[in-house]
Length: 317
Image 1 (cartoon, rainbow, N blue to C red):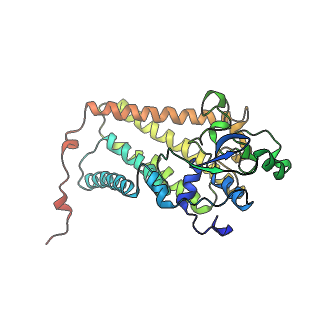
Image 2: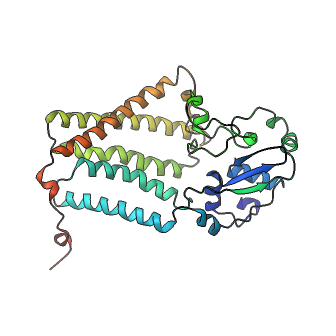
Image 3: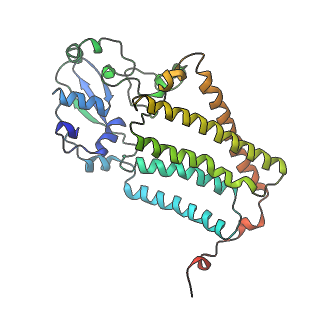
């Protein structure tokens, strides 16, 4: 938007748009939500004036401001500090705490990327199109003649939601067309090396953190062996899969999405078996990890009930 001279457009506006914050009303069709890219098309082609809503007004609609997100970040950081402190003082900690720290790596990444994203905005901004939708599509030419899958503006930005592309999509996701709201499963596009690395680091860390529990004291030797095998299985499936996907994204020039990498094999039979079988193994391993975390609470080492001696970690004479 800023490249088009719209200096008041911010990342907050972009998040707001791609969360369904703008709904288009036309004289000859039902209302439907539009994405940031679709709004950019309508503004640059002079079908709509630039929305005047400010980022302050958008934040006023949000169910959580930056202060709430900062509090959540502090709570997560405090738990990580607790686990690190226990490790330094050789005090045992539980699998529950370890698994929570692993999840915090993903939470931290989400908070970083979504720090300027408004939360759960339920009342959208209505944009009124003066020209008929039929007239707009006619002016767009042949690219707008195909039947739409999500909304009539698919010719601007299409196939961006996982739920409408995956096999058996009629069994899940939003079924009404045009979409009454934008789904929460946007198919991600990692459009630069920096974004690719920023996603890879927490993904790898999430899996590797579980290995810290390799030599933990378990209630039985069988549970310890099961934990080790699930950690190895998760790391192999996630590591190999993500590495191959990352190489594909780089080779394709950062133009493909999560579902269209490697020629879109995830959407075609029988090649999608190569995606669903490892995916099933990973989900199974994750379920076993959750079960082990819960079951291990029945018999904890006595050291898990000790508290950290913070004063001993402070420099002193």
